[in-house]
Image (cartoon, rainbow, N blue to C red):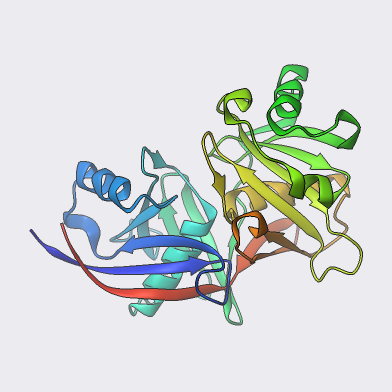
Length: 273
């Protein structure tokens, strides 16, 4: 058994316990893929990551695992892992931090106390099929008249996005995962008048609701800004249905979309693997 430095952080919240938790194993080059997968299964968090030596052109390497599989990219693990790497003494080669994961190089920048990653390109886009729309209606109970648009907005995990007219309808959804049939669904709606944020989101995987989701917010941001639903930089809220209070800051810079948020450190120590 070998001891590895370990961090657990809360992403998209400045306060612990209000965002999306992430486990990070540092200096993980000595671990096999099977060990990484087994530890991620054991933590039972939505994602666990492993910091690795940097390939050429990057500041650090990263592998991202759910309890059941490896992901090429995910948003909250990107920000949380970067925060853990910086707090452990990581020194980027330039002002922009370069993370290497299976999806390639992901640029990250510091914006005051927050970190932000550049949204990766979509690998699937465009209007969803009528069968997918029908599956969403059956699996969420959303009235057909409340559904503004349905599009594929997949940047790796498989997201399909549904734009609703009313945040109250979004908040009332009780998902039927069997009816959704494994669809990874992101719901988004404009915030009610007077809210301190602009849009609300919920994210449903094949079997659970994710508290605050970086990859979904990245693809939703590209979608809303491209179609004019969002006219500029905005704040998204996510997690209230689960007792969380996540905030995601979506900005544009020269045509690029950046997704930012706070990260709160919760646990530091070692793990034996």
